[in-house]
Amino acid sequence: MKTAWSGLLIGMSTLPAAAMNCESPSLQGELQGKFDASGEVCFDLPTLGENYVAATLSGVTDARLLDDNNRRLRTLLAGGPADGEQTLLFSLPVHRASSLVLHGEEGARWRFQWQMRETTALAKIQPLDPVSPRLQRLKRELAAGGSTAHFWQELEREGTPMVERWTPAISG
Image (cartoon, one colour):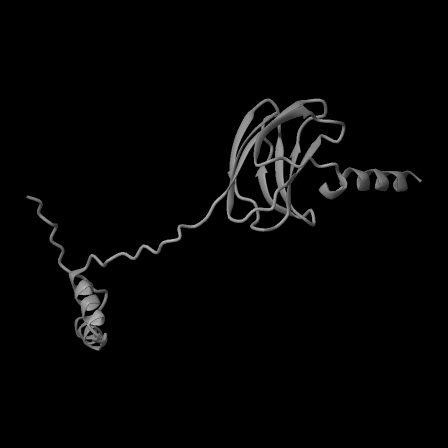
């Protein structure tokens, strides 16, 4: 009978984040409270595209980012001091649900301050011109309808890696 009760207690102490009452924070803000007997507090995080999260935690000893099946994606903080403040910078899974679970000592005060930003890649392509005079010449030849055959013949004859003499530009 004792074994059955201990198994039940162990099972109850490892409830997944989905079984907990998780708060759903906005993209930025601050929340604070006291850890209950479980020593956990949970946040269901928004589903975003490319993103980053800047957060500050106080009174938290461990922080984990979980996927929608409560599997650990990342450990953000492990074994932190209960009376310390930690600054985190991380990203959420792209277009996938996730939750943040904070751990601390029962009865201890906690604070979670955060800012989540969705980011987008620059829409413009930024081609870089080659610095090498030889590659600049090859680029001009290709733009004029030429081929790379002569270039590769030269490299085969000279060997690789391709080493060029570099003369810095003189400004007047």
